[in-house]
Length: 126
Image 1 (cartoon, rainbow, N blue to C red):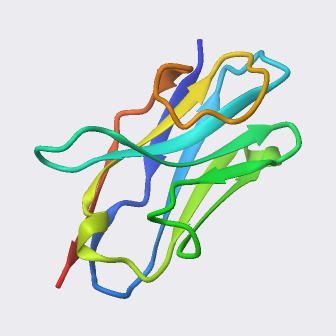
Image 2: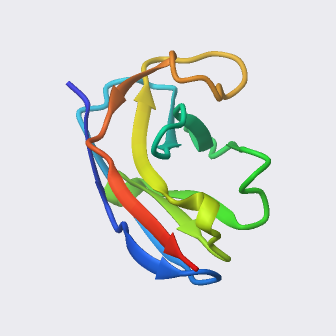
């Protein structure tokens, strides 16, 4: 069973940075995606970024391109989301997610991601 534990959320000012971490365990798949989604109050969950194991291919939502960077540390089984130049509209609960075995392009839809963390709150204050 895949388990995901997020950390690193918090309260920051506009323009500041945060790094989220997602520690993963239990993966037995040879090819899978891990990603970040977020959900703001009163809004639907939205895709933020994802990265493929192996290979490291990435995909970003247009709203975060150039500001956020997704990465992974294979030795630590940990995925990161470096968030720079944060804006008030980035305020949300951020969820780490993992798919099972995948083929084709990295998905920005939630359905292929079968495993989810508990979420971590990111608040950007103006």
